[in-house]
Image (cartoon, rainbow, N blue to C red; front, top):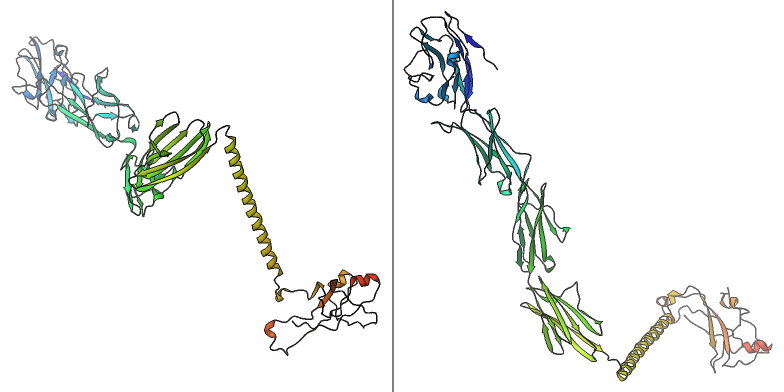
Length: 568
């Protein structure tokens, strides 16, 4: 806001200057001033001298003057300067590297000859010194660890003042300084500043020094605290050894900005919920199936980081479940594969006809290729060429915790060995015959047992009280009266009452070897438990017999006896 100058008119003497000016500590300020005097006065002879004094009286020392004979106040030396155009009526005062002690009231005095001395006491100028300017640090966007940026510090400056900008950080950084065209602004740029995760929260200071060449330079610092976004930084043990039944606690420390979210993952499947207490995972009563890798995964807006804990437990060698030992024909010979797992890691060997092979072996007859990975040892045996007979092959794994092995009996028939082929063919046929015979015997036994179960009678299982019986009449026994039913339907029917036919003179003898048909009716069945004595209820049924041949011959039926009593 412009200041209104004060004007004094007295016998041709006048001065125009602001009543108050403000300046920031360390900067510079100009008090614009113009004055007039009666130049036509013949008593005003000689050079024109100007003086600036503080207060309201002339002192032996001035703050600024163009009179080389006049002493200068020590605190103003080099900082206060009078305009070089005083002869033209310019009385402007320049103050550099303003200090708090500069806050005073100043007036201008002119001298020209013996009669041209005049103090402009009625229109002084007051100087007010304020706080020093604060530098401004500009950081483009959000700092990300590993991503270079340009840091800029800008501050007000004075065109005729020596000022400096310096950077202060936990590690050495330097900037390139520059000034605006009018000299009122200066800046310093730190190119390609690469923040790290460790820089997060660290103070960064831009310090401006005004009047560095003077006795009392002014320092104006500006400090910012860096906010560096960074991916997660995980720390923790990489391998944990335990005994079966132990309780384990895995700790994973995750650092990042913003604070990462920590989860536990096992074999690429979500295995546990978000961990708590600073990334702790508890495993109680561990078993062999708990062995393996447990991955601590931390994630925030900057990305994902992870570390894996390997949990191992000592166990004796065994064949790995994912690859069972096997042998197969290949290129006229055999190839065998064997994988053994244990902790600590196993050693693997092949024994071929009592010859031990381990590691990597290659010759005309066989080749062994082995490799080891973590707690697993895998080896492939290749028996080359065409060979006859048999070979005993053993895969053996051993470690400090035990040993395991598996045998293979391999047969190989040479071409042209017809005798051996015939022998093995006959043996194979005999084996097949024995197998078929055993199956047939088993089937017959099964059917026989089934028939026996079917023939067993259970009184309570009867639902029809009429039974058709096929029988031969035993010799020496008088047959009951048997009536041949006129048709099958009558034979299986249940008559309401058995009728006893009358005997006729044409009764004939029935051959015991002939086939007879009989119908038996039971009027009721009683459980055995209801019969209390031999005098209990007795039920009878009539049995009538006919000789089919006799009937076919047109002869009458013959009765071979009376009634037969059947008690149930």
